[in-house]
Image (cartoon, rainbow, N blue to C red):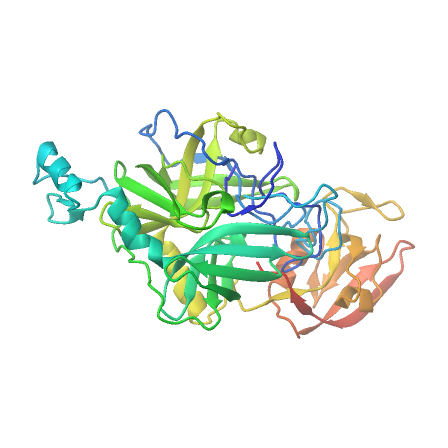
Length: 457
């Protein structure tokens, strides 16, 4: 499971971290998609064999840590799951209340004795290449001021999610995971360096690579992270920093080593009945926790080499988060070079089939999971089955109702909730598109709607 850290607060035992309160209104399609099943509970010990050989075979299914609540799924209002009002990717209300989501370092030129003495004296030891190897406390002092705590309000899901971010520019551009802000109707970011809290706007995101860029409104003079140009290497000592547990304050610290590079993992989304693949990841033994998503994986030189994104445990295949005492098998980070490249594309305002720039378009329908029978007994499959409508939304104004099957959006054929989500991702709030659907009696309808602004991601 992908333990994606950026978690909704107050998670329940055995709850997929990508799940949250029931399905609700869509993100792109609905309020976003669910963060994947998370498998990181605060305080879990690191894997017993962090140096275990890696390989490139797909890893255990991930849990998309602090992600959006259940039903947020990529397909419409919860590409899976009936529930609250939603649109593609929807989210909704859970009667139980909101849930929480989510190189090798060489000491070359100095003997161990000398290195230890330097560390005690507050100085870093130099490796064979002349680079200074910092102590963990020195790394914290260098990197912490350039980090932020991200808190997302999941309006349609009636919940809150927390994660971490890295400051890229002094004017307030922040890099984080898309799943940290997926489904957000409002985002507040607290800068660790100056202690100030800012309103954040979404500049853009790439769902497929789990990368998002935020802009802090009114920010200036912020400290920024130092990004490494070197790739991670197996055996390299690393430090992961973040907002573990979503508690805020001084960033949490998790140390470990790089156990493998270029890894692929399957990230399950049980609420949507689907799975995604993340590739090219760096695997480490650092015991990151929910809330650490979007935070930096740092080298011994104090430079960011990755963005913490997912984790798994020995029970990963179940898609549930672990209970106290269960061991985290491995953690995964997106190489910073890849994340930075996507961030640069977003900052340049260059959209693509994967990169969405600006606000998310909202139709306002909640769609059912694949195979679900809705309304008068029409099985999902001939379109995106509507399970609910958000009052006052474009869908409500077009007179769609529960039990209808959406068959086309802006000329794009729709055969599933995921099709609807993908189609909506090409548009922005204010765009006028046509929607075609079949009602429960079999009659066909078409209407023009103006898309509204919806939840992020």
